[in-house]
Every structure is written in C-alpha cells, then in structure tokens.
Image 1 (cartoon, helix red, strand yellow):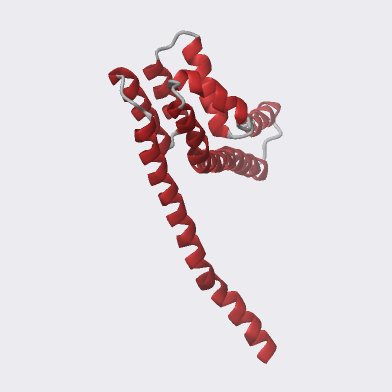
Image 2 (cartoon, one colour):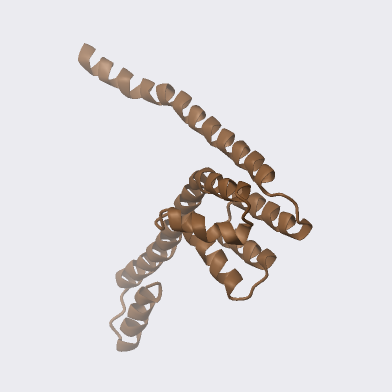
Length: 183
C-alpha cells in the first residue's frame, strides 16, 4: 500500500508522463498512507491494551478461585479460559501463553513473551508474580489477590477522575446553548 503511489510515480516518470502536480499528489498520497496507517495501528493497539487492562481483574478473580481449590497456574488456566469469552484480547493472549507452554517453552519464557506482546505493565507484574511463585513453589492466590485488588482500585480511581471531568467538559456546550437562547 505504501509503495503504490511511488510505483505510480515511477511508472509515469519512465513513460514520460510525469508532471509536477502529479508528482506532488503522489508524494502527498504516500505520506498520507504511510502516516495514516501508523496512526490507525497505534490507536488499535491502545484500545487493545485498554481492553486487556479492564479484563484483568475478572479473569484473575476466577484464577484465584482455582488456586484456592488447589490447582496450579497451568492447570487452572485452561479451565478459566474455557469459562471466559474468547473475544477478549486477554483471554486470547493467555490461550497463546498456554499453547506456547504446551509446545515446550518454559513458563518463564512463555510469560515473558506474553508480557512483550501485550505491553500492559499490570499484566507484566502479574505474570512476573506467577513466574516467581512457580520458581519458589509459594502460594500464588494471596499474591494475585493483592495485585488484582490494587489494579481494581486503580481502575475505579480512573473512572472517578473521568466522571469528575464530565461537568467541566459540559460547561462550554451548555453555555453556548444558553447564549443562543438568550440572543
């Protein structure tokens, strides 16, 4: 897609039909396609990261229940994935983590690759806690409960901040409507 305007310009140049306005339009089309796709892809990534961040508490609450029932991480993961919606990006990523682990990667490597793919710091912290728990043989339920509670509090705080900003954002449109009515 990026090269289409450049190939068109090259074709017109070698056929002898290249004019200055055509060259300008080709360069503008190339720049629009190049930077436009970067912006679209970046915004899709940000939306995906937000969806992952929102679904972490619910998913890991189910994991904590499985841990308290006596399962380890890799035994609990397929059960929770089966109960969760596969439309969520977090569930897809953890399903990929499970597939990588079953394919022979060590748990630490699979968790590290998932953290790099997702680029969500909260998920990275949870995955690091899972790896440390696996190495040390310690209980993971209490650690995850604290991490998920912190994340849930953070998300609630962000929602409150957004709610407090709504009246401020509505002042100007309401004022404009009132001025229009008064005039």
